[in-house]
Length: 298
Image (tube, rainbow, N blue to C red; front, side, top):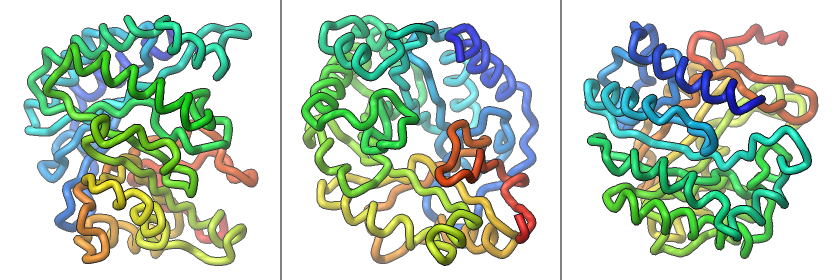
């Protein structure tokens, strides 16, 4: 996808938020709830406490951040801002090696500086999430699967730059949650909160894993890896797709205050269709509330 399309899609999503009338509601429970909600389905839900944004760090329309700030203020929501370090060049430079070298040489310092200067001027409470799911080796992200030293150096450099421009912002280190995640920990001075990803896809679980998984099944090992760092834990990306019973089970589970998860301080739903193919030929699951119930035969 070109940078122009990326900028246009973020601007369009911001406009949709401002104009939307909400049609979705948070699952029941007491754990704080947030959404990535580009079409404003949750715009009228007072239960939503966190508004999640995804930003490319090249060619960003900065005025859209001002709109997002006002949207969040009007609804008394905090902002979780995921900054994705893509390189949009449509040639051999759109690679992990080019990105790693560019970060090390300071090529992207100004990208981060400009974004964080705007974030630092905003009035909403803000948490920045940079270079998420670095422990994912699927090939989805060109900043993932690096050596731990390479990633930690890049992460620290970007957070140092952002802190200089936005001293009141908090920072989320956000692995997917796999076994290797702890290798990428940048140190307690660079982390205020740990984010994890939890997605349930019933057809895949039944065919590949031999049985469906619960929210607790998937979160437990990831939480146990994260909790050793003595930080609050948030499920920064959450989604579930399955038949009616499966979706109802997840909806009733994701905001429960479980005694085994005392540091779980929020869950943030990814209310959008998947953009990268699920493994084993399971396509692009549609996580959107209202579209995530599928026929049991699918």
